[in-house]
Image (cartoon, rainbow, N blue to C red; front, side):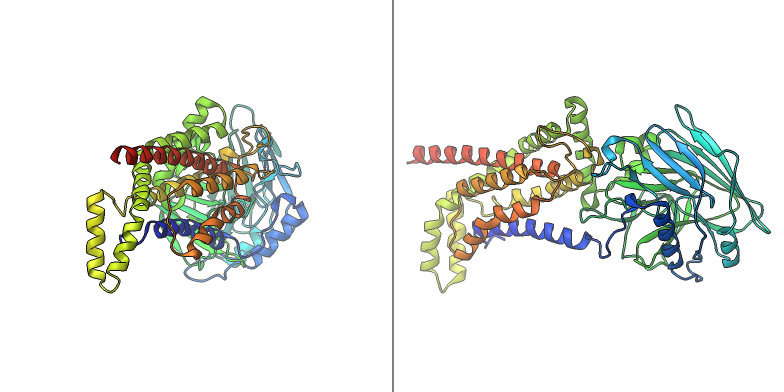
Length: 520
């Protein structure tokens, strides 16, 4: 790194950033066209259930979850609450789950649907294929056909009577979207219960789609779609969740460990099953990955909101951003203030880096003289260059180190602003009505590119390679293309960050010029 020129280090850091965006989009874009569950009718949902179910991984000794075939699903119980509306079908499963809040509505005005693809939440399967077939051709009965939740929880009891087996499900629903389930059978028999297929509302290239398991020691296991062979078994799980970018469906129990069997469908999507025998108790939740809501149920459920490699940095960042929003009352301005605070904290590092870049530019002519003088003697060249740095107080790593230290911070902020469902439906000013969506008029991406261009113009560089110079000139345009589709919240952060960089660079340039005048 020490032998790299300043412009090469800048180019390297920039290229690494671009490669990050390219790799992130490539590896997370789904290989199979997504199902649009929100547009599906009851008939389409039934077709999804039958198609996915019949193509499950085959029954085997390692993963004994049997595939199913069903008749048409029909509604058995309707559940209504202020923020959601759900249905339980004749097979005892949560077959529909609609979010009522306005901010979760789709562009066409329809409500977001978090259920519909197989397996459905609270679906039971058996290792014995004969019992399985009978169970999915025998309807449950319910002690009531509808419940309406206001301030208190309400319970329903479902009963299914098979030839040699009776199944009882007691489900208690709460107004905030969580529920509790107790399953009992008339005799001891192995069965499998699932939190359901991941909501699959928006399949995008921004985040992990698959399963999240929390071990008893609170270690997290992230199982992405396409990475599961159908034979994974975990025996010390407290939380079993199927998640996408914004939503999750999960089962949890912090008193008793789950035995989780991972399966896949025909498209290699991850399916979560929990093995039980006799009585099974668990808490459950279907809904947005809202940090406050999840932690209000149980603080440990906050782990379901996961930010990848830099979670240890991202979580405190989100909490601070949430703290700012609670006092400011606007997520957009909270992002602006948050960015300014981060820049103030990092100012000593960026200040030193900028000074180092100015010093390196000042020494560039002397560097060329040394390169010409010791062209055939790299050892003397290196020794002379290091002596030149020492005499002038220049640090070749000074401009690179601050960039390297800021990379994990940037990645953490990137994940926070991409994954925070709290930004969904959050307004900023004028034309920005939803910080989780792209800028509809591309104003922020254009301003971001303009400020990046200005930063280039005033940043000291001394290119010797014309190709490097051309690449650098095109970087604002390249970043503009990337950020056109990024959420407005993330673009806002990058734009404000660029403005801060421009102001700091102008300040450092003037300070350096004054220092040169005094020295002269």
